[in-house]
Length: 288
Ligand SMILES: *[C@@H]1O[C@H](CO)[C@@H](O)[C@H](O)[C@H]1NC(C)=O
Image (cartoon, rainbow, N blue to C red; front, side, top):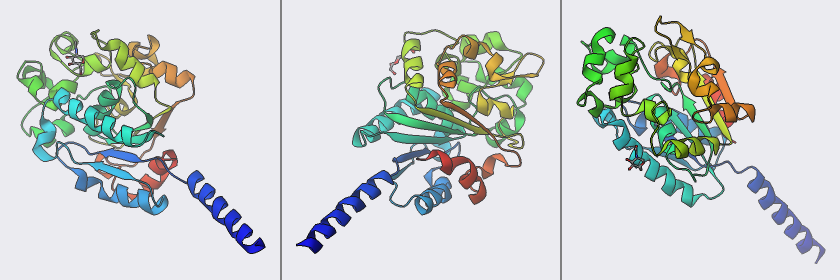
């Protein structure tokens, strides 16, 4: 009788312990010109550190499909996050790498009643991109200075990159032609602007990771929402209008202590998800 009682207590307390150790499910979105397989090491490290975590390594828009129009991709990622979120009413974590982090942010902002608790942006061009190293991955012969002639057209907007190409010398054309970044940053007001902000402030935590040796995201500070002015000086995000006017709620998150900026030097763009030490230092601490 006593033993049975004791066993019952042990069993009960074990299940409570395992509950309190339970980690939220993680959804991972890969970068441009790659697929879910490129994120395998990250999945392995998450499972090794936090056994039992449910990880969704999204394989939508892999390879060349990752160049499709940004909204086309965001619509599907949004539906995917919505479905996964419904399976886990306790809340999920979303991590997007490079372009995947920008598309994931737009998807989260497009879901005003999502249950994403933590969003991790891993070296993503959140304020746009203006530089050749990234460009040449995809368009080897295009020069940054003249890329606007391609991207700021109806045809250029068919590519994902056209949607977040942000030429500091051609801001009028950017505002006129870009159908993606100025919308999700509420620089261009639309009927969706209010929900874009609601989706953002619903996060419990926004983690933005990037660093000065990235060599692909240009300027690298775009990973933290900072960006070039017309003289190519980088304006810190806290001084940019989208922040001071709290257009998309990043200021609200910061004031609530929910914005985490991670700056890590000596990590190349292609290493953020491929180096164990980096994963352990900048990603795992936020997966609880
Ligand atoms: C607002 O969002 C909906 C749903 O994603 C979309 O169909 C519509 O085109 C958007 N409207 C504008 C003005 O961007």
